[in-house]
Structure formats: C-alpha cells, structure tokens
Length: 264
Image 1 (cartoon, rainbow, N blue to C red):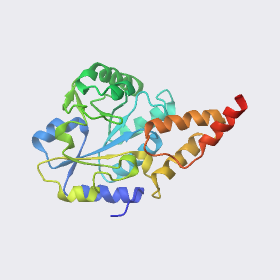
Image 2 (tube, one colour):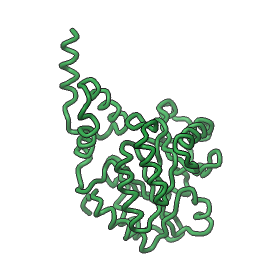
Image 3 (cartoon, rainbow, N blue to C red):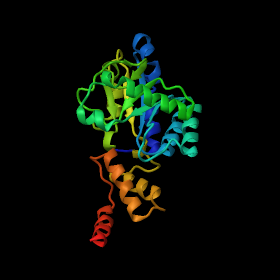
Image 4 (cartoon, rainbow, N blue to C red):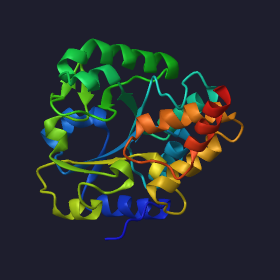
C-alpha cells in the first residue's frame, strides 16, 4: 500500500478501524482487557507540535472517535509555560480525548533501566503535567522506548502504554513510516480477542502527505523563522535528539561552520 500521511487519509483510517473496533481511551485499558477486547486505542505521542495534535483531535472528534494524547512535561521544543500550548491541550481534552504523559529520560534510556525502577520519576512527571494543565493524568508512554523496558500494565496506578497486553496488536507511524505493517492490514487481520493499539505522531501528518524529512523541514522553518543563526543551530540539535533517525533537508551545518570559522 502507498504511504499517505494526509489528514484526509487519516480520516479514512479512522472510519475503517471503527467498522469493527470500538475506540477506547488508554485509561480504560483494564476494563477493555476484561470486557471489550474488540477495541482499538488511538494513541498520539506529541514530540513536537501541539498545534498539529489539536488538528488530529478535531478530525477524530468529527468522526466520534476518542483518543489518548501523550504530552511531554519537559519537551525541548515546546513549553508548558506557554499559554497557547496550555490552551491547545485544554481544547484537546475538551473534545473528549485523554491527556497522558509522554515520559522522556535520557539517563534512564542510556542505562536501560526497568520501568519499575522509574516509578517515582514517572509519578513526579505526571504530577508536573497535572499541575500545569489542571487535567488528571491516568496513563503514560515512553519517548524512544528501550529494550528491557518492562511490560507491566500499571505503574503507580497509571496505565503503561507499553504493557504486554496492549502491544500484541500494534501499528505505528514511527519515523514517518508504517514500520510494523500497514494499519489497514492490522485492522482487518487482528484477532477479535485482542485490542489494537495504533500509535501516530502528529508531526508526520498534514493537509498534504509529505516525506518525513520534508515534514521536519517545514516544522523547523516555521518554528525558527525569527531565530538567530545560533538559535537555529540549537533548535536543530534538539530536533535531532528527538528523532535521530530522521534528518530534515536543511543545511544547518553550514551555519555552524561559518560561526566556528569566525571564532578562530
């Protein structure tokens, strides 16, 4: 199947998924696993752009679909101190969607620790997100999860999106590609007794489908249009740390080389 990351095609995916599956929130996972295994979790990890997240939330709402949006409390490229971002999160929640934590810890990722050893750190980050948004946080996901992470369903009373029971029928747009098979195939072929988890990252989706490198380039140009060359360099490095396997099409290295040559 062709790669299509347009909003129009996302709406098509929603319709196809809901022909045979009931959309559920991640916070409802325990009940779903007991009573409604023929469900689907629409999950969004918001690494970059809350504006794009809100656009997807509006599309879902128009189709009667509820989804879970995992937001960072310490995102390097968007701030929860920004009133506009808080308003976007509030609007997503008001549309009937769940707000969860997208947890990121480079120290934990580099050391490969088990999720159970991070319970206090996760709880603190959830409380920070709750304090910033005034929205209860009942679930979390990991940014760039590592092997050996652990598959417990509940950590500190919150749903772990990476739990074994929630990952057996899984599809994702990771790195701007359907790397675990096409969602339509998963919707049609997954056994009835298991819920599906469909993960998307709003950065990859737009009015017109774009290649991942072009999606990042467009985001970079919009966010840095009023930045100095060195501010652009710092922002570019933050982006690369977020998705190291996808590089935008720009030439920020040229700016860095020019700056370095002037210092010597």
